[in-house]
Structure formats: C-alpha cells, structure tokens
Length: 153
Image (cartoon, rainbow, N blue to C red):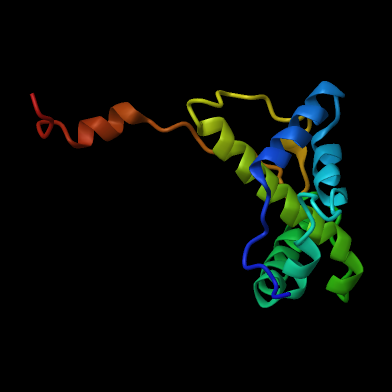
C-alpha cells in the first residue's frame, strides 16, 4: 500500500472523539492521544504510520522536528545540541497530529452549520504553542487616516 500524501482525519470519527473528550472532561493532550491511539482497521489514525514513513510524511517530520526544537527553546527547555530526531519521534508525531487536529477543529468551527463548538481544555497550551506576548493591537484610526480622502462616499 502506498503512503498517503496527507495526514487524514476522518471528519465523522474526529467529531466523535472530540465529543467524547468534551463529555468526559478530557484535555487537549488526551484528545490528541485518543486520535493517535485510534489506529485499528477503521480508526482515524489507521494510515498515520504509513504517512510518516512515506516521502511527504518524512518531509513533514523533518519540518516539525525543527519547529519542535524551537518550541523547546521557547519553553526554556532546549534539547541537547546532539539531540537525535529519532529519539523524539513520538513527541514530534504528537506535535504533527496536534496541529492537524487544531486545523480540523478550526475548520469545523468556521462552518456556519457547525457553530462555535468548544475545543478540549488546554488547546491553548498545546505542544508547539509558543510563549509570547502576542501581537500588538492594530491602530485602525491611523491606518484609515493614511487613506483619508480615498474612501467611497
């Protein structure tokens, strides 16, 4: 069987796991782990091992390995200089699935028919989420003033 080109997350099964996480008060980390653990014949993660062993998955893993190292530094816990990616495979794969799950949650939440379903607790403090002060608020008045006289009436 050829390696899949995307890390697929079946929508129906994804929503079932999301609902279960919310009903049982599980955290974001538990939710992502439930996705990873659902790897049976019909599970949501049944093709994930193949994905990570294929060319696309290998590239994604390498990209996320760099992001994982940067995240560790951001958290004040840098990895050793000689850290080997294969020693952190589980963490990096978790990071990839977590980001895919967040993208899926956000896509579903933006659907007008789905509404603004609440993500599992702890999603803001997930692996890969950098610490920081956030963006500065935009000064829309000064931006609008730059175009003064150029607005349609």
